[in-house]
Amino acid sequence: MTLEAFLLLAAALFCVGLFGALSQQSIVMLMMGLELMVNGIVVAAAAFWFWVSPGAADGQVLVLVAITVMALEMAMGFAVVTALFRARDVDTTDDAGDLRG
Image (cartoon, rainbow, N blue to C red; front, top):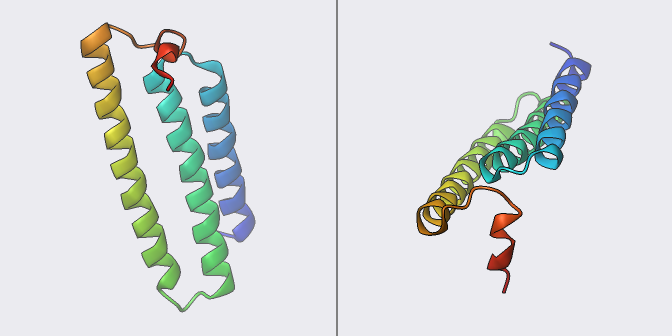
């Protein structure tokens, strides 16, 4: 695949994630949209890294670390949402707005 194909894939992932994050009120769907946006950024970063230095494995390691951190972050987010749902029976962003400071 060419760099342009990877960048188109990354842009598509980012746009779908942005639409999901902006149009949904469910906290889980919002988090899934954010996840797609971050995946688009990771795909673009990996494609650029491969295009700049195809022989080095540094970019691959960085992408694996980023994906691992992202998975951990999403697991923590889903744990918070699950705890919030169990405690208050709340699953939308409007209802969870009173959690500020």
